[in-house]
Image 1 (cartoon, one colour):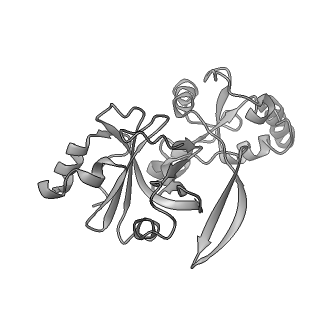
Image 2 (cartoon, rainbow, N blue to C red):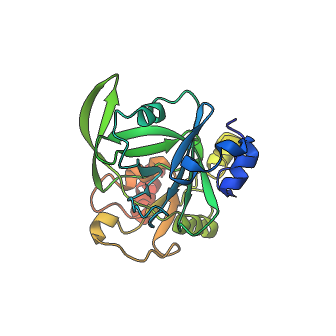
Length: 253
């Protein structure tokens, strides 16, 4: 059933019912309050940056390529529902919207648990199984989360920060997908599996700014390949793109 929805497309709950052929008697209820199970799969409908119709306002948001999501207050880490979500027999379908008055949700893909925090409500960081079409970014903002393995837990610190996907796309629309430093193209090298893939580099690092600011996608961002991106960040503050180009030019001369 994993190919029934298209990543990036919008669906109402009624659309989902129709696609899944959900019997009328099983519609509504938990479908309208955040997440529910249908057959072997779970479906998450989350509000981002706004309170839901029940009045709860969770800090659901995208952090880099991951989706931070909170369970219902009544569902602890050991509740049957959360146990089923964390160890699903089927798939986890994740939909979001920016306003609880909107009927349409954007489908983001099949979720996979990346990290868990045993809090109330439970906080889960979801990755997506279609990760090859997503970009992994360097990290900046500290987040403390717990990761569970076969009933045991350990605490670790991961560094993650928010990126604006619209700014990223405008940068790509302007500069293209080839690396600004070395001109590497994933599509040219890997064909169809490399289509639409690149990373985007902030010319001024967010940790140097220390606060939210209005990103200019043309002035502030550049598409780069992962190798060049890593090399740009080999020192702090990062190398400029021209500096890295000069290093490569000198080595090849």
